[in-house]
Image (cartoon, rainbow, N blue to C red):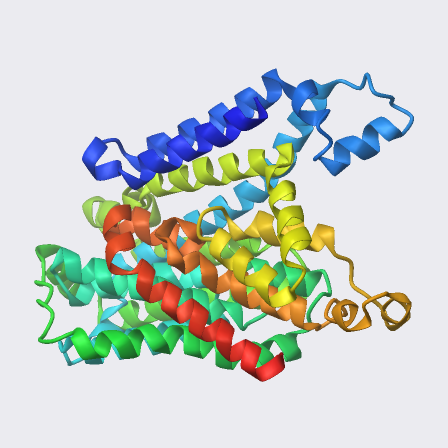
Length: 464
């Protein structure tokens, strides 16, 4: 049954990858594997837990509760623990998508799109990639991706062009998030866990991260030619221009950007999860739009208030997220990821090889449990612990701001770009733009891999 969980995950993953040939929405496949893996786990809990890969269970039965502790309640508790983490991501995603949709509906993105005069593909590629790279460090890679996808929709009409630029945004946002302590969930985890400090992660990984972003852009600059097909101004957009005043449009845009930028500040000050800051921003925007629209007609309110806009938020993407994260959580709880981490440490025993492998694996399974597993496997070494170690040079890499932790943040953050399903930004782009998994694999994965290995090699040259 332990192996059956892996089989279900692999089959579900294949169904997601073959969404278009099978004509089955990926959200359905994701939800099924999320539920089925936990079902197999709970129905065979004692057998699976007796294998000893769940350290929490091992500690429990070694304590006063004894070996007869109720496995059902233990697994249920594990599910509830993961549900909290998953819900935080989903509420964050919902809040960000709604804020972006409100700004979009009020024509706020015209402030940016009107300044982008070029339709040249190469110029647009550089503009979007560099803008995304730095925005994702200030916000985070998921929020930045959602914002940039809204801009792409406003500029170009061709589906394949939108898919390509959305994919390059995913690469740039993951690279940008890797060098900032607030740019990615994994860097936040390592920062809060005190494995890294903000100053060192920025100074030591910004160059490798930039290389990871810029190498694919340079490569594609030699092959891309011509202009994108411009997006047509729809009746909806014209209505925005006529019905919403310029001042109101600018106000909504400014409030939306401020709400997104305030999220990391709110987290730093209050230490509350990021989704709370995002919901605060959404609440502010909701209140502001209600005040602006209070004297408008009922039909106008229905079109422009948050209640009317929220119906257009892509809920299928949220369910897709939920299914994938739930399935990965079951593999983490049952111990599959612990086996993987142990295998890497035993067979590689080199911090660069281990982290490069973790980065590649993060393209298949979520990087959060992989990083969490690594944080659980290795403790932060003190100088005394390093002096007592048999291999002092190897042990020194695990001190605070050691190369293992900084390279882990880089690899886990950027390696997920290799497959579109390997990062939160990729999953969001896949859901919002309906990007085909196979298309991404054929067109983007090799580019992402080249960028990833180029950045990793750059880090190795700098610190090895």
